[in-house]
Structures are given as structure tokens and as C-alpha cells.
Image (cartoon, rainbow, N blue to C red; front, side):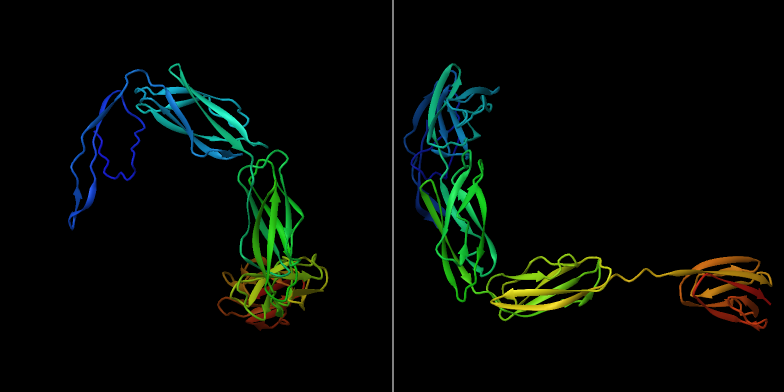
Amino acid sequence: EEDDPQLNEPTRTVLSLTPGTKFWRARSTVGDASPTTGAVTAWSTSGSFTIPSTPPTPVSITFTQDPIPSGNQVFMQLQLTAAVGAAGGAVQMTSSNPAALAVPATVQMPANLGWTQVQIQAGSVAVPTPVTITATFNSATVSAQTTIEPATLKSISFSANMITSNSNGQLNVALTGNAPPGGAILNLSSSSPAVIVPSSAVVPAGASTAAISIQTADVTQNTPVTITATWNGVSTQTQITVTPQGRPVSITVNPTVASEPAGSFGTVVVDSAPSSDETLQITSSNPSVASIPGQVIIPAGSTAGGFDIITSLVSQPTTVTISVTGGGVTLSTNLTVEPPPPPPQSSTLLVQATGRANETVSSSPAGISVRTGSNQSAQFPTGASVKLSISDGRDAVWSGACSSGGNKQKTCTLTVNTNLTVNVNVQ
């Protein structure tokens, strides 16, 4: 028994029924019997129908889209006269034109059901192509015809309805289905020189969309432009408004002196905040030394935008001019690219400690810590000042690179300009 209280249509379709006599009745809800209860009518007189016990056979094939555009995927729905048994059933399928519309060799009907659907995909055709699909099960057949339609031009669109002058953009075109072999060659036109479009563009064979690059010219006021695409006698349009480009009022780089690999960062400020993202052209007088992206974006609602500057290795200081152009104004600033500083040089200091046992000679900065009766060497930056002393404050006689002239003294300081040796006799 099945109860469905939410029917609103004049008919009710049950996709899978087992053999035997089936009974039905109906009632409806009209108004309210109380604030919380609907007013339900009495049941209708019962009706009945019989599902034969003969083996189920195909009764219909339908498609969720008919006709089917080239390349589109649709569902093919298969109905039997009754549900199959618990083991299910394999329905044999054929197509009169597999190149235009291929179907699987068999469709498996699930257990205890008499309806199923599978997804199929149309091929690419150049002219309307009728195709007959046939289903065979239990020695009975049923056929259905559909038509594969060649793709037509569906739409042309732009990601935004506004674009600034002197910038690049991208149009998107869509077909109703996949382009035929050889592709779909579209004719393009612009109603104004403010938007420059190619005279033609191609949607590749088997594809349904394509991107088309466009450029905008300089304008002094908002300029609406209509772009038209035409293919196979079908035209579609989109409108773009070209807005005047903001004028830069400053361009700066920070730092103004840079070296590889640190680079620098540029900032452009315009006279007024744009209502949509705005693109200004930027150039480098020596891209091999200071490379920049070619454009800087001023975000909507902002008056400034930034860009990275990648610097290369140079052997001598090199001045590069970074420029920005917009709204008929060009501004420039200079960046100096310098060779990286040479790596720090180091020298070796050797300390030989003798004299009173169990004493330690140490250095400041750290590096030397040597017990009497032994020696130790350490690396120090060339030119560094190094102070040597005895750990417990004892006197010592110093000689070699740091000499006390035969006198006792607690410390000895020297400049390490080259590899040096100091002798220490702890008293």
C-alpha cells in the first residue's frame, strides 16, 4: 500500500509495479477544519487496474532534452510494462547513428523496478540529424526518435559591464553545444573604436566555449560599446562601457636602492578612486635588471595600487627608470640596482697558551677558549678588534701579534687584519 498526500497534479505516474490487480482511491484537502487541521473530503470510489503477469517488455524511451544539441549530455529514460524480478534484467540497446548519438550496448534494469535512466552524450553534427534508439527485452522492442541539432551561437558576455580605457579584457562566447569538426569560426564587430576586437575568433572543435582577448582605447568620458558575434546566421550581442582611465599623481619605489635578490616594491597613486578595478600600464627602462609585471591594478574604491619589482644581479650600480601611464599622463621614478655586498672576509687567530697550569685564555668576541699547555685557532672577521684575557684575572706575558713588551698585563687587544699568532705565558 502506498499513500501520497502531496499530489498537486491531475495525474499520478508510478514507474514500477509488480504483476497483479492494483486499487486506487483519492481525496483532497479543501480549506481548514480547524486552525491546525485541514478539511479533508471523503474518499472517492475505488478504482482498479491490472498489471499483467506476462514478462515485462519495453514500452517507451524518452529523453530529458529533445532535440539534443551537439555534444550535450542528456538522460535517456527507459520504461517497461512491469517491474523485473529480483535478479534485474539487461535491456539491449542500439542506435541508428552511433556517431551522432551513441548508447550503451545494454542497460541494466535494477531489481524489482520497471524504470531506469542512463546518461548519454550527443556527437558533433553539422546539420540536424535524426537518430532512432531501440530497446529490446524479452523478445519485444520499442523505438524512439530524437534529433541531434548542430550547435548554434548562444551568448557573448563580459565579466563586468565596465572596463577602463587603455586596458585589456576578455570576452566569453558560448555555443548551445559542441563546435563541429574544424571549429566554429565567429565573426566579431565593435560599434566603437573604443573597444578593439579581432575580426574573427574560433571555438575549437568539440568545445562549447572560448575566451576572446580585447583591448580598449583612450576615452575622455564613459563610452557604451556594443560587441556583436555572428556564426551560421545567428548573432548575439553584449554591451560594455569604457570608462576614462585615472591619471597617476605619483609613482614611488621602496627601497630606492636595491640589489638581487631582495628587489623592491612600487606604488602608484591616482587622482580619484575608480568604481571598478582599473589597470594602468607600467614599464621598466631595463627589464633585464628590474623586471615588473607590465600593469598595475588600482582596486575599486582605492586610489593606490602596488607591484613587485624583481631585480637581477649586476656588477656595478645601474639606474632603471620605472614609469606609469594613464589618462594621458606619464610619470617616472628611478630605482638604483647595486651589486650585492661582498661576503664578509675572515682571518685566523692562533693562540698558544703556556705557563701556570689549569688556566684559560679566552677572547672577546668569543671564539678562543684555550687551556694552558695547548693552542687553539678561530676565525674572526678581517679587521675585527679582539681582546684576549685570562679567565681568573691573572697576569700574563704576551708576545707575537699582541705583545706586552716583556711586561705582565692582564689583557691584550689586537686587530685581526690577517692570519696572526699570539703567545701567552700565564704567570
